[in-house]
Image (cartoon, rainbow, N blue to C red; front, side, top):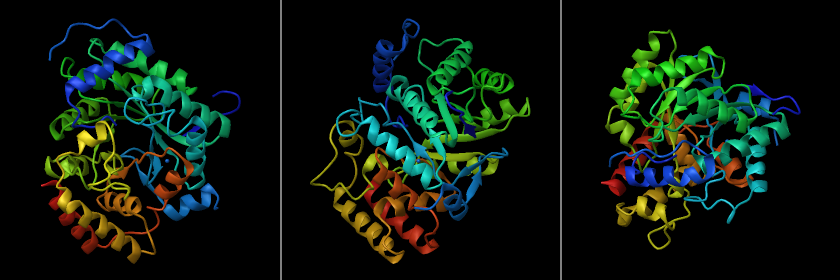
Length: 363
């Protein structure tokens, strides 16, 4: 956990490589990275609220985190989320404050998000508030990073942007086939050894890739804390491809990014009112003749639990599944709504009915 004294201070798994490659190339304008090489195709005090909502272990580590986190993909991201247009730094600062006040202290960022802007904003908010938070960030395997030495170099740059001496969780954002999993895990081991990271994880790793990462780290008696993957009612691949079971078997926390399907589960959208841009393309294959039925079911279940909202029910569904959701929050209202997913639980029958309704939308 990071306590910062004054004055110190999701890319989706279904995004294809062409999108990622374009994102990487654009980032060269912002990060000053190495030249591109040719490659082929998260009222009452926080302590009181935290006790009410409870905590969970991060994998088999000794680290305790709130049962819900905050994903900061949208903090500084203009390409997909439109940072600077519909929301500002002031809005994000209030989202941070609201999350902390609700007992949500886990914040996940990445060097890729906003080309480092997300890390800068998070570090700024931590410094201003002097809050105790759990900071997770990620290393992105840009195609020109062909040496594992880049992992520590990137981590040090992330720490500079965050204004922190170390992070609580450092993750490999995406598997990189040009470097072996053992070599990448060796780099993470070095980060722990140098005191730059307290725990390590991966993101978007398949069940097999994750098992290999677990084995590689175990040789140095370091546990793999987490595997961050896309998981929501509208994207249930972790249940289908073995990742969720593999995480449970290995004692690895499954961190669920895009837990509200990039806003599709908020109740804001319908077949006549779809999000624009990439998000419209991302969910164009849904069976929208059944989408309204899922939205109605989320509303009915929410009413049965005292007026919970669509997002709160969708997030609670993931918590029931033993996942650790990290919804985004661009303002205080969204952050407060996220926190409403804690302190109660769906029934087994409700979980099953949501699964069935979601299957009709996605199949």
